[in-house]
Length: 256
Image (cartoon, helix red, strand yellow):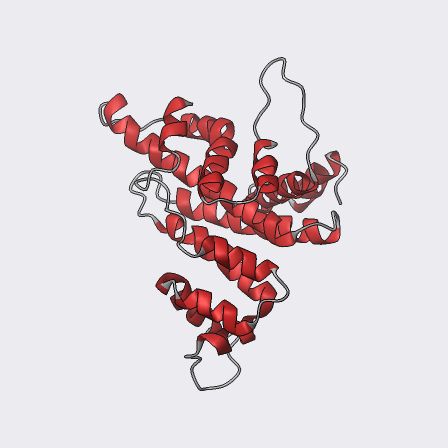
């Protein structure tokens, strides 16, 4: 636990907080922000600006043959919801593109689960909790980032601890189960995310022997729902379980 606490925000394993993140999050949540103000914030971060233009020129948003080259126009095309999704995804997706020589499908599967979890948590927050869909989406993405960071730390440390041998997959799984929420919370804290986001991540920590269960907050419930449904969806997509198993598994928790 001390190792993960020390290395969770190490740039070798995680990513540094995007430069303009705090200002961008405030601006997107502020209804008084103008399109020009948002475009100006994107312009100060080349990576964000590049991703904004890339998305605006994708078939989903592009409405004419002329390329979108103006940040103001790109902001107008995506709208508030589109910008929120873009910000959240751009924050974490590069980390999932690591070249994994050990268990090469791991980052791909984790990203698939994370992306589905973010979508499910976002919808649960909006439709069930009447909460903050963007925060729920960001939470799920941060949890996925935590899993990747743990994977990278374990593989790197085991080169020394196991004299070059790979850890058994069950060891990696157990460490992700036990440490993911804590690592995600440390990353979120280093990015100066809100206290309610940190609280929702803390609620995901597994309870030890003798520890009382925590009553989750609305954001915590949306995150838990999203991660469980996404896990079942990935298993179903890869033909490991049936649709009836998915429905029965969600029904056990009283979830529709």
